[in-house]
Structures are given as C-alpha cells and as structure tokens.
Amino acid sequence: MDPTLLALRWAHVLAAIVAVGGLVFARFGLLPALKDLDVETRDGIHDRIRRVWLPWVIGAITLLLASGLANFLLFNARVRNEGWGGGDWMRHTGYHSLFGAKFLLALVAFYFASALVGRGASTQWVRNDRAKWLTVTIGLSLAVVLLSGWMRQLHTGPNLMAAGDGGVLIENMTGGAGRRDGGPDADGQEGQEADRSAPAEDREAPAAAGSGEETAR
Ligand code: HEM
Image (tube, rainbow, N blue to C red; front, side):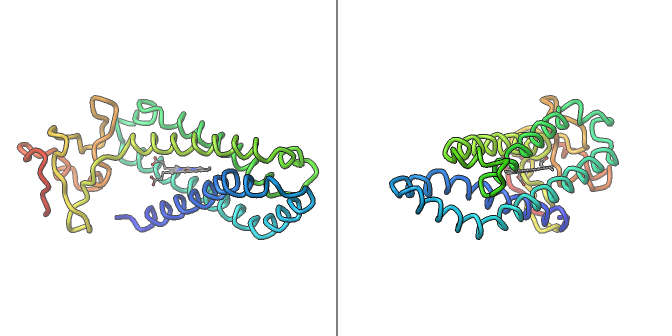
C-alpha cells in the first residue's frame, strides 16, 4: 500500500464530500428554509454564511486541484514506467479524454461554487438566481463524480492486495483469471492494480485458482 496515494485519495474524497455536500445542503436545505423571509433578512443570512463558509470552499477547491493533479501525474508516470498495454493503455481506454472532460467540468463547477459565496460585482448575476446556479453546479459535480468513477473503474477491480501488505488475497473472483501483467483485458479493462509492482514471475495469473474462493496468504 502506497501511503502517498492513500493520503491523496483521502484528501480528494474528503474535499469532494465537503464541496458537494455544501452545495446540496444549500440548494435543498437552506434555500427552501429561507424562502419566506423578507429580502433584507435573507441577504443578511447569506452574507453571514458567506463569511464563515468561504474558507471551506477555497480549501476544498485547493485540495481537489492539488490532490487531483498529483494523482493524475503519479498515475501517468506509473502507466508509462510499467508499460501498461505496451504503452498504449491511455489511448486504448480513453483515460486522457475522460480526465480532460472531468477537469473542464470541475473548473466550471469551481467557478460557480466560488461565485455563489463571493461578493464581487462581476459574479452578482450568479447570486441573483441562487437556486438555478446551485442546481447547475450540483449537476456539474454529479457529472464529475460519475466520470471519476468511470476513470477509476478502468484500472481497478477486486482487491488482490497480498495479505502481507495488509490485505486479503481474493483469487479469481469472477471465475476467470484476470490479467495481472499490466496489459488490458479483452474488454479493455485492466487486471488488478495492486499486484503490478510484484516481480514479473509473480504476476502470472494462477493456473488453476479456485473459483469464487477467498484465499488469504
Ligand atoms: C468537483 C470537483 C471534483 C470532484 C467532486 C471529484 C471527485 C472525485 C472522486 C469521487 C474520485 C474517485 C476517488 C476514489 O475512488 O478514490 C476522484 C478521482 C480522481 N480525481 Fe477528482 N474530483 C474533482 C476534481 C478533480 C480535479 C480538479 C482533478 C484534477 C486536477 C481531479 C483528478 C482526479 C483523478 C486523477 C482521480 C483518480 C481517477 C482514477 O482513479 O483513475 N479531480 N475524483
């Protein structure tokens, strides 16, 4: 288990929870609760919220950008260094395109998330219709999360981490031995991520692994 990757993953997921959770609460909890108040009271509340919530939004965006970029660069280096799919893995799976789409959508979501808690005149149009732009930002975030899951699914599967590495070895869960040598499977998906750093002779799929059995070693 790589502690840096684990820390990046924790940071990324926690920041995403804070950012997207705040948006959902604002849209479906706060706005309906403030609906019947007079404009002056409502604006006062929004201003107080802005002051306390702004650092959280900036912190979450910074963490998402830093951990996301680091994760992407480390993953690219790994794919290149280990020669996944004979160097063709990124093109074969469309990972870069998915990342590009995710990155652009995330930047637009960041713009709206900041504008919603900002106070600049140039972004006032966003705060003039909070319900609409909150809904749009939640939609963008949802698309980002779906793309993230897709990207992750391209190179992960059942946990094959060796027991000595703190995990339980699950052999042959689908009944067929998935490739564990870094090359794409027939369906374009990867074999198991966790075993790729093992020496080549250890990365061969077991010849007669029991089907559907959990094997701890
Ligand atoms: C609205 C903002 C964002 C949200 C909600 C979000 C959410 C997520 C989630 C839920 C995952 C899956 C985490 C896991 O299963 O461990 C993920 C992975 C990832 N994210 Fe983000 N993210 C956001 C922004 C970004 C940005 C700005 C970048 C790049 C600069 C980025 C790069 C990545 C990368 C490289 C992965 C790993 C994908 C993989 O497993 O191959 N994310 N993100």
